[in-house]
Image (tube, rainbow, N blue to C red):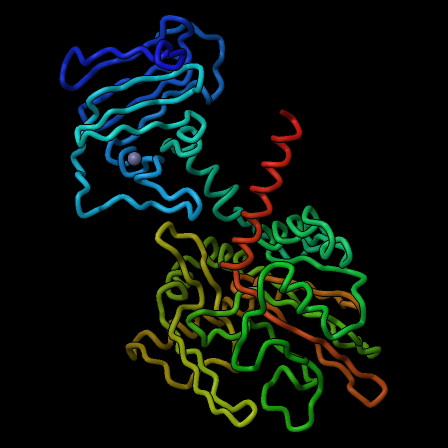
Length: 429
Ligand SMILES: [Zn+2]
C-alpha cells in the first residue's frame, strides 16, 4: 500500500528518546522527549532549510495531552465535536510506543502503551501548539479579541459606524460590528427604520435578547411617577447598568426612535478600562482598593406586580487571574446602603471611588444620537450617561433598548470567523 510504504517506522534506540525521519522528503520529523513529550519538527529537524517562518519551529506536546485528544471515532464524537473516551480507564502516564510520520498526508501516527493508535494532522497540531506566541494569537484572535482602551477625546477615531441594512443582510458587516464591539466596546448602527422591532432584529441576528427584571425590550422616556431614575428627564450620571446582577447583562442596544430637540439629551460615554488604566498608573493604592473591595450593589422594586430585591457584591474594577479587567461596576443610585466590609476600609474606599468618578466624568465624551441610530456598547466595560433634557409634550425623547450577553456575541463572532476562513480557503484552493 502506498500509504504504508510512505510511513517509515524506526523503533526506539533508547526507552526515552527516538526519532523518525523520512527518506524521501524530510518534511516532518518527530521525537519523544523524557518519555513524556512528543516534539514535532514540521520541516524535518535535520533538514537544512531556508524557511525561518514560525511554521518551521519545533512543536512540543505532552504525551498525555495527545492521547487525551485522539481524534478517532472511538475517542471523539465527530458530529458533536466532543471527547468521548472513557476517562475512568484513562492512563495519565500513557507512553508513546511507536512514532510514525506520513509526509504525504502530513500526519503524525502514534501507537500508545494502552494499545491504541492515534493519527494527528500536522495542521491540527500547529493550531494547538503550546508555544507562547501561538497561544497568545489564539486567545487574542479567536477566543476573545483583545480590547483596545481609548480616551474620550479619541472617540471619533475608534467609533465605527455600520449601516442597519448591511448588518441585517451581510455576515461580513455583522462580523465587523461584533468585532468593533469586542475591541472598542462601542459601535453605532445608522439608518435603521423607526420601528420598535429594530433592537429585536439586531439581537436575533446575533442570538437572543437577554431578559432582565425589566423585561426584554425596555423603553427609555420620561414617565410620570418613574420607578427608575433612567426614566426621568434629569441628567443621568455615568454608570453601568445592572451591577446588582452576578450575571450582568453584557451589551446595550439602544435604538433612538425620537430624539429631543432641546439642548440636552446627549449621550455620555467613557471607556471604564481606560479609567482603570489611569487609576492604576496615577493612583496605584486607590486602584488596589477599587479592585479588592467588595461593594454591595442593589435594586429593589417591582415590575408588573412582581417584587424583586437584587443584590450582588463585587468590586468597582473586577480582574481575572491574569490581571485583565473583566468588568467595571459603577452606579450611584444602585449602590446599597449596606456596605458589608470591615469598618476601617470604608473611608479609604470612598476616597478611591471619588477619584475614579472624577476621572470618568472628566474623560466622558458627549454626542447626540439621532432618530434611526442604534447605539451599541459593552455594559461591563463602558460607563454611560445622559445630559438632562427639556421633556415637554412636543419635545420628547424615545429610546427602545435591549441587552445581549457576551457569551452569545463571542459565540456568533467565532462562527462568523470560522465560516469566513472556510470560504476564503475554499476559494483559494
Ligand atoms: Zn482514539
